[in-house]
Image 1 (cartoon, one colour):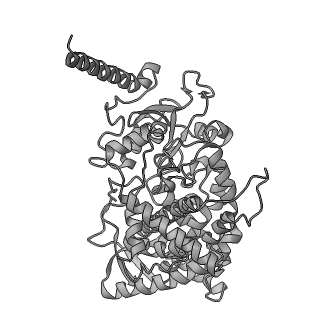
Image 2 (spheres, rainbow, N blue to C red; image 1 turned 60 degrees about the horizontal axis):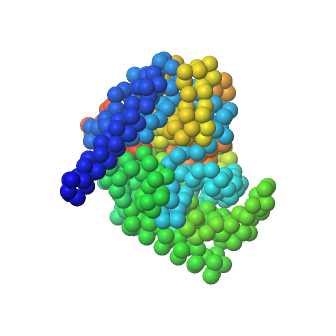
Image 3 (cartoon, rainbow, N blue to C red; image 1 turned 90 degrees about the vertical axis):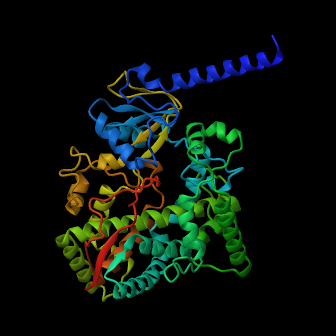
Length: 504
């Protein structure tokens, strides 16, 4: 047998072996008798994503098809088998009761080669626990009070720009303008930088903010490798962050930290907290662990705060206005509350004033139910887990777990008339009597969203200021029902949100 023939035979054998292994992997749930759809060999259960279907459409389809069949259904995250949770009791086990068995997300993270991937959201194991402990003091209610005046100051500029646009045209695309507002807020409290996005939509921070969500280092195949085989990808020293995104944020963070330290500048913001951690000026953790951060770790956490903070809050406010425009009675009730509460505080928008706007909080909570910006929560089983009461349903160690928060929020078993915008779903008494895992826009348990307080504060200020001064209604350009952006992992409207705006 010639060398060429031998090599060809070996190549065919390797390809055949890999094909058999992949075929076995893509029939994992079928062999176990767990309900699931027949997956695509390359895309798994994600077939058509970003081209024919939005991510939220995939989660919703799977949830509606298999709910009632058992505690979870089979799913394939590209080539990775995943348990797709269908029952709230199992959600509670995963997020709270048995959290130590599901504390990891199992996402790709490679801080050594890709520093911005060392962010809290994707860290696992001891690295996550350590970072969570280090950052826990930066998002307390006391720290929110320090940051509150900065957000209010920017909101006044936002209202001026918004009003100028309303005077020029009665129809405004609100999503982009809201994103410029939150970009200026996050840029200020995270970096101490006047971003000027409100005045200039093409300001550098706004442009980089958009790119941080859209520009990827790899195409769909590369993303499939990173998500299906995260540990293997790390061993190959692969990176997930686009090069220009990494360079921009690393440069900004280094320059900001250097400038503040050399000039002894304090702003009582997020960056100050991270610099204190870098220089170990905060107290050690209960275990006595060193709390210091490296400049790369500061950059990763700041990048997360920036990318997550501006997008989630602006998207939530945009969807809130979209629903308020269609529900005039609710909008009028909210406006009346804002005016009455502000009058109690002599017209000053203070931290306590915003806390007193109960119906505003209900409107935001209901918006997050209907339009859950991060529609799924991901976990990874750290050991074999037998679902209580279902011996056939075993989540094996290393298996990805998907909790479809968005689809669950629209389940009639949990919320009457689930597709109707009804802030009364979040009256204090109803919230008190509802299990916490039935509303998950910020997750639940020890790994809930650390920035929840800030996100809610930012959205409350923005909405209160808008509703106080402007009336919103639908127009010919308002898309009803909403169409979701197919390219975005988070829930986002396709083509923006156009509303008619009038001064009150």
